[in-house]
Every structure is written in C-alpha cells, then in structure tokens.
Amino acid sequence: MKKIFIMRHGQAQSFSQSDESRMLTELGRLEAHSMAKKLQQDCQIDAILTSTYVRAKQTADIVAAKQESIRYQESFDDFIPSADAENAAELIKAMVSYKPNLNNWILVAHMPIVSYIVEQFCPDNMPVFATAAVAEIHYNEESGLAQLVAMHLPDVDEKAS
Image (cartoon, rainbow, N blue to C red; front, side, top):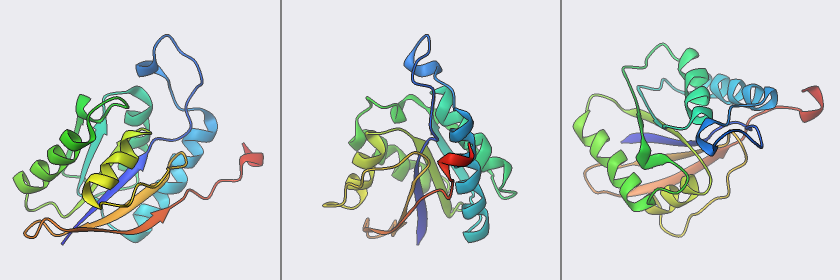
C-alpha cells in the first residue's frame, strides 16, 4: 500500500508578472509550515512531485525541509493548474511504479487540478482544497484501487499573520 498526499500550495500573491511567478505570502508560508509539521509527525515522505510554478515549489521546499527521508524530488508541467488531470494521475502512478522502494509520495500543485487528480484516483470524490490542505490517499498499486482516507487542513490563525 502506497500513501499519496495531494497538497494545494499555500496562499499566494494575488498578482505578479505571470501566474507562474506568483509567490507565497507570509500567511502562505505559515500554512505550508503548519502542514509540513503535521506531515512530519504523521509519516516520512519519500518523494515529492510538484508543479513547475513558483508557489508550488516554495511549498514543496517547506515540506521537504521538515522531512529527512526525501529520496526523490521533481517538478513537472503536468501539474500546473490547467493541466489534464487524467494525464497527471497517470504520471503519478507511473512514478510510483518506476520507484517501487518509495512508499509515501506528496504532490504539491494547484486548484483545480488537485481536486481533479483526487477524483481520478477515487471516483466520486472531488474535494475543494483550502490553501495548504492535503488529501491523503491510500493506493494499492497492484489492484489500482485507491481510497481517500482523510483531508488535512493547516492549523494557522489568519489573525496571527
């Protein structure tokens, strides 16, 4: 059984020169740190996949800094907001198959594709993600079956930002 965590990036700037270059806000960094701490307490992440956009990479770097077990990390355009969710899910499955010694994976990407990817793994489940929220999926590679077991939210008080 593999665990696949699908994470939306932390809160990002509203405007930038391009959507790709939008960076995390201070609240976004706090959200990412909160979720990274939860993940650190709950499991050891072996691999990180991320969108090529700045805010997703920043979030992934915060998660990686709390994990000593990362053995693989890569960014793909297949996880940008407008990418095809079916192709993105197939890429995740291929990476899991290609790296069988890595059991706990996290994808850091964007709305709406994170919701659509969850639905690709777990039909009839398409959660709406808050910023830095994580969907935890248990995936049986042999049967191809997956189960959405939890949605995790960052513990950040907006008033503290």
